[in-house]
Every structure is written in C-alpha cells, then in structure tokens.
Amino acid sequence: LVPRLRPFASTVFAEMTALAVRTGAVNLGQGFPDTDGPAGMLDAANQALYGGANQYPPGPGRPELRAAVARHRARYGLEYDPDTEILVTAGATEGIAAALLALVEPGDEVIVVEPYYDSYAAAVAMAGAQRRVVPLVEGEGGRFALDLDGLRAAAGPRTRAILVNSPHNPTGTVFTAAELAAVAELCVAEDLIAITDEVYEHLVFDDAVHLPLAGFPGMRERTVSISSAGKTFNCTGWKIGWVCATPELVGAVKATKQFMTFVSGGPLQPAVAHALDHELDWVAGLRTALETKRDRLSAGLSEAGFAVRPTAGTYFVCADVRPLGFTDAAELAWQLPERVGVAAVPVNVFTDHPAEWRHLLRFAFCKTDEVLDEAITRLHKLS
Ligand code: PMP
Ligand code: GLN
Image (cartoon, rainbow, N blue to C red):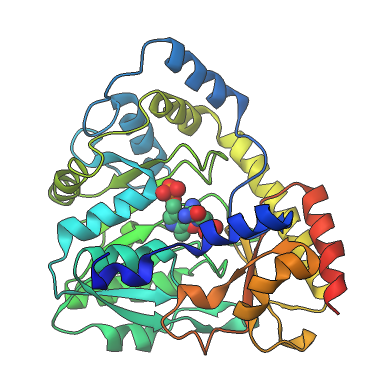
C-alpha cells in the first residue's frame, strides 16, 4: 500500500464486527439494521431480477430511479433535471469518493468536520488532497455543535471543498438552520464546493428537521448533494446511492465514477425507485421506531452508568465512559466484547485528535428491542 493510504489499511467496522462474531457479542458497533426494508421494495427487486433487468444499466443510472430521486429532492423544494443533474452511484460512499477525485487536485485542501465518517479521510487521501479538520464542540443541552469560527479559520487559499454530513455519524447531531446558513455563507465567501452526505436524511427525531445545504442562498450551484437508499429503506447491502448537482458538477463526478464501477446494482435500481415513490409511509414508521429505540438504548446506557450524549438523528448514540471509571474508551471498546459480550465503536478512530475524543463510545440502536435489551443487561456488568 502506498504511504499516503497506509493509515486506511483496515476499517474499524469490519474489525469490530469480526470481533463481535468471534466472541458472540451483541453487535452495536457497525451500523446496520437487523430487519428488512418494505415488502413492496423487496417484491420490486424480485420482479426486476426475474424480469430481465440483469445487464448493465445506463451509465447515469436507470431513468426511473433518476426520475424518482428528482421527485424526492423536489420534496425539499429543490428541482433537479433527472437527465443531466442526477447520477446513480454504488452507495453514497462511491459518490463521495468520485466527487472528491473529480473536483479536488493533489495538494488542495478539503475541510472535514471531526469526528468524521471514516471514508472521508480515505477518499481525501486517495485524491491526494489534505484534510483541514474542524472538531465539533459542545453546544446547547450537550449537543455536538459546529464550530463556526473554527470552520472560517480552516478555509485558506488552497481550500477547494467542504464535506458536510448531517444528520451526523457518529454523533447523531443534526445541524440547525443557523449552522447550515453559516456554512453556506462560508462556501460562497471562499468559493468552496460543498459535498453533502445526507444518508440519514429521513432519520431525524423529536423536532429536528433535515435541511439540505443546497437549499441555502448561493448553494444550489456549488453543492454536490449525496444520499443513498441503505439507511432509509433498511438495505445497507444494496449500495444504491445518488448524486444531485448542476450538470457541470454531475458531469465531473460521472467522468470519475464511470472508471471506478461504471454501473452497479441493475435490478436493485428499479426497486429503490419504487421505494422512493411509494414507501415513505413505511419510512415514517421506521423513523418513529428508531426514535423509541434511541430512547430505549439511551436510558439503558444511563442506567448502566454511562453519561449519554443527546442524539437528534441517525442510528447512533454516543456515551461517555468516564463516569464508569474508565479513561480510554478505545481501549475499552476492544475489550468490551470479551468482557461483557457487547461490541461498540470508539469515537476517536474517526478523528485526527484521538486524545481529545478518547472518552466516547458509539452505540448503534438500529436493532430489535430484544437485541438492545440484551446489550443493556450485559453492559450493567461493567459497574
Ligand atoms: N455516510 C455515512 C455518514 C454513513 O454512516 C454511511 C454508512 N452507511 C455511508 C455514508 C455509506 O453509505 P452507503 O452504504 O450508501 O455507501
Ligand atoms: N455506516 C456504517 C456505520 O457507521 C458502517 C458502514 C461500513 O461498515 N463501512 O456503522
């Protein structure tokens, strides 16, 4: 492996899941649901599979999926031309990597909010660019908030783009309108491209609202908006994602993407189109169920002695291990499966400042209540 990619030789998700399997631990590490998506979507995939949709789909994606993505984006008041402004990708992961490869040059800088989803640092490195990392700070009610002065300070003459993930993995924070407006102002002032990761767009709780950054003044033309079906429809293994942006930006991402995978997921694309058009009531039920699961796991973790941070969206809750007498959550995370039979992910692996973030564990609550309850029972053994 070339030196610049050596830090990315393995992923914490694969390693922690392997450890959970080896030890028989309840796996609240890697974020994936343990139930299937809507039956109508699975039927549509089945029909496509047996209906001959098994050869290469068109390069930009099947037209019915691009049209469904356009209708879905229009729900936010954002209009995209399905023929020139939407590209289907192999999950959001490919969309993010292809966008960075297409839009930043070696030596350019990309602003990344810390903690960051692990693929961002790897994709920035693959593009030969440098990341400028801005940590989240503690905001109102203990939420993780954007450090707006820090973001402004991070933008310099070589800064080309900013990666914005909301709802945010791993913290579960959902950026407010005021935070996003400030990001938009910065992008316009510094002429930055924003690459947004909105894969948890439907998974927001209480009174939190997901607001696409592309809807803020001056942002429609400079935002590459990325999302995917995995989290919305409980199909993380399908890897059907999409990129929405101007024809020029989408064209650039497509040029890169066509030599990465060219196309993927032929028979799954019409099923996701069906889901986007017809299964949003199912998604509303998922959202409500996840809100209850968030409460269930947060309460259980508190009872077990963790200091639990508030979560407004995603699959995840972060918990501070210090009240239990531990100082290093990363060390604890690797012992936890053997020690009590639960797997979680240390938050500091998603940062450039492991010492500052070493007290937090991320737990996934996208699991059946029985699984969550079993994990909570086991975690009580820690105190
Ligand atoms: N972004 C974030 C923030 C994620 O948590 C994940 C993991 N599901 C992804 C991107 C990857 O999405 P996909 O599976 O669509 O590539
Ligand atoms: N997005 C999932 C998580 O954060 C993991 C995806 C992966 O395994 N790469 O847990």
